[in-house]
Length: 386
Ligand SMILES: NC(=O)c1ccc[n+]([C@@H]2O[C@H](COP(=O)([O-])OP(=O)(O)OC[C@H]3O[C@@H](n4cnc5c(N)ncnc54)[C@H](OP(=O)(O)O)[C@@H]3O)[C@@H](O)[C@H]2O)c1
Image (cartoon, rainbow, N blue to C red; front, top):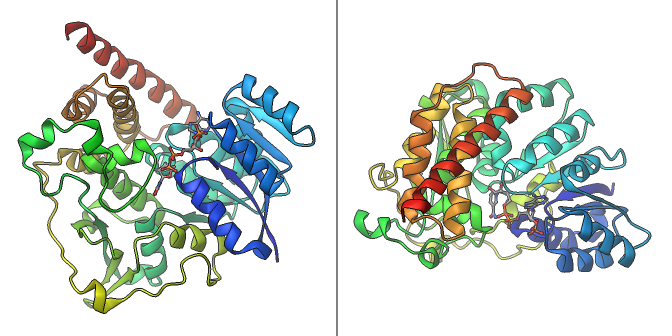
């Protein structure tokens, strides 16, 4: 059967790799819809190649331009456009590969539309994991993880009742071996120089602070319904063990393979089937030879602790963590902050925050908005002083 797929964020790191997976499995997929932010040139090439019926872009000027270039395609724009794409009835599966909070509303819409979700956008579960997982259950929708760690756990976790721990691995990021003082003064080029993965800028910065690992812990808590006490993070610089589960009897089942996002993306899109797709080379245990594991250095990377704290406290604390961190990361990428300011500002906002228990989506979005404004105000004040 040909699966009809909508891709939110087709011009990004995950989106383009998903299209490569689709290229390698041409008879398995039909691309129904594509969306992008502002990379209109790439999107236009993708429209020519994949001939989707529906497209959405961030702003209206770009949608007018694309409409004139591709008159047979229905082109939307803005957040509303993403929601319209999520609402398309013909799709079988929606890949949510936009970055940041923009993924939340379309994911909700796609679940209500009873479409299976291949979820790359971790911010959605960090902000509203309880609501999303409940909604997915009510609508009999599968949430298929794209993140390599969660894909690994998804593949290993076949006996939920006898589970003891989830073990989430981390490459340790670009600063694993750096001294604390050097990390504080790291420059943008150092931060973007990830040793293992080539990803979008936001997640690359989060990987350097290890906030990304913290967001993944929260994501795992929701996806697999596991207490934070039962989630362990282990640094594994080679990134061959993508994550593991430990059962009550002491057995640990890990998913191992070459570090390639094509594999988890493909599994989410073809689940439950497996095909020989883009990655045909076998993992070579002999060549890999050495697998190392370390405890994370929580002192050098305090963002990881902060994420655990937010997850354990619950309510809208994770909304606060996500919003403050995202605003600080954007400001860092714009050259407004130093690297260590990202954590300091996130912590400052977090420590002064009062959470709401059992929030609705409307409350989550209101809180998100409020926290972002507060974070931007702190950043502006710092700018004024500098
Ligand atoms: N990259 C990875 O290896 C990886 C692994 C695991 C999880 N993830 C998660 O997957 C998500 C995407 O990551 P990524 O690395 O692929 O990010 P990315 O390369 O920055 O791509 C983000 C995509 O979202 C689009 N976008 C951004 N802002 C938008 C807006 N306001 N409206 C509509 N579209 C918008 C971008 O469009 P334009 O580029 O056209 O502006 C692009 O297509 C993130 O949540 C990340 O945490 C990524």
